[in-house]
Image 1 (cartoon, rainbow, N blue to C red):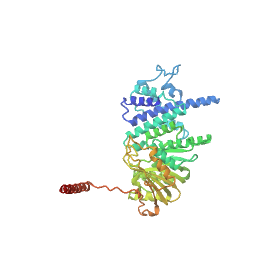
Image 2 (tube, one colour):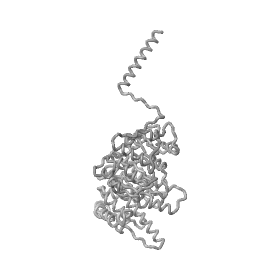
Image 3 (cartoon, one colour):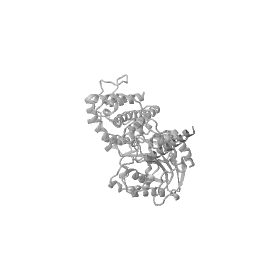
Image 4 (spheres, rainbow, N blue to C red):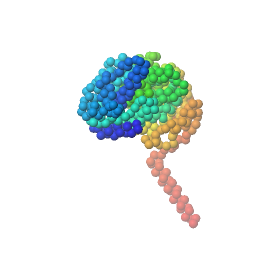
Length: 483
């Protein structure tokens, strides 16, 4: 049922002049979905307070609650269309009253880690792009069919929302910007193995895929206590995101996965001077796929000891600094990081190898990130002691990856198993850091267990064909002479 509701919403949005892409569809669905969720949350808390004999103070004033403006109900519990706003009246209320009212919560919130602050932040960044009040009315009616009452319903909604994010990522210019393949994320988490009580951070949170999957991984552990669940809700996850749309999607994604007040900050992580990072700011675990290919301004580069315009390299410095001693990380980065000869790349490899134990490198094939042809590696490291040996694994699913044939958990099962004991195989090998060039610290992926394929240029191929043709002609001449 829920799947059909999401399909109906997209069908309606495609007819509106203000929404032209998958990004718009997800953005507009998200803010309406958030308000529906907020209504369910408030009703649950009001009922809980009533059962405990305590009054409940609603976050939103009555006229701004879902039941008042979006979906007033009649005595039978059905939408009372005589009392609902629609057309220009609905647009006027949403744009001129509702959004300014919700944005005002940011200034009134007691701290950034409250639901009030998240409300204000979301509605200060996002805009209603739906131009027709009748289109908006249709979407609200569809979203009102959704329910957040049970865990099963939330679970189904989270899967549908994830599918929406994936679709949006595939449609964008850079698929990896919004969507890291969940099979890869789950694999990274299984290698890093976060534990309840540890803090987990993603400074380039995107749609919060790493944090959501880490939450699911930890929540699936047996015999969790009430204290453990509270720790997971309030004292485990932290993310930062620069872009407004990704910030909103991250919050909605974490809410649907079961985290009521996501600790996601809307900020440009790279504007923080890493020399100002103190012990209290650090984390036990860092999981991230920072944006690569971006170029940062000189004033941003000044926040880092190794200055470079490459966004991913600045993020890697930030992550190393943000790890506690003994902390672990799994970071996705372009594979050219391992071999680039510019001063920044060499200095960063040296920093990583000397300050952390880079114990594992997973080499991913092209097509791992749908919509992005760039090849990537995953760096697994532990902070506090230098690298002595690095284990490499060259992932080869045996097929070409693409939108209709994406990376899956089965593709990564062998890597997870072999990585436990750093086994050598046709796809894996170890490299002693003493054998690495100490001037360049080149860590290129060169599998010693696999014969190198010789690639001929077009002229060489043509010469091969001519030689084979001449040889064939001689053979045929000899055969004829014998007849």
